[in-house]
Image (cartoon, rainbow, N blue to C red; front, side):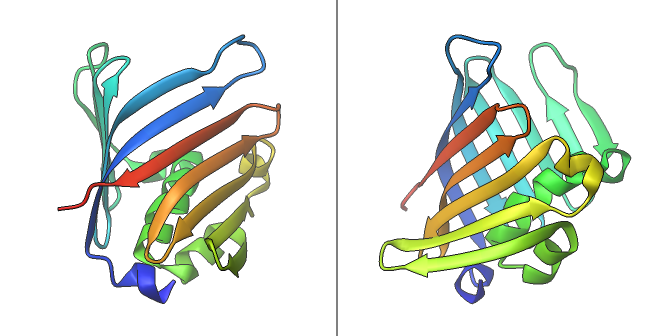
Length: 162
């Protein structure tokens, strides 16, 4: 967590695969993921349709082809805040925030580290079983969200080197 806390910014390419029991094939999206310490997280989807999700502090901005720009407070959607903090607090190395929203298990081995986050809020826990984040050194490389109905989302993160 201390190594993550030292990262001031991160730019990466992502691929996200949403596997749903109701669908025969996963839904796949690709684009860019950006983090600026301490509280800006941006997901720019390029495929299959362009969209932008930007979180800056407690504000969320959503833009897309089917959605005109919308700004709202993250506090309007407690479940969204929990999911956002799973990634944002991890990237910030912010263990107190993680522990506010999750039961946290941290494992390390020679290949890297893994965080297993289980929501403390029972309403959210009925939907999300766990969020598992794998990484190496000071960067997250994979985020897996396991849902109670058997659906899951896996985002692979490839840092952009400058």
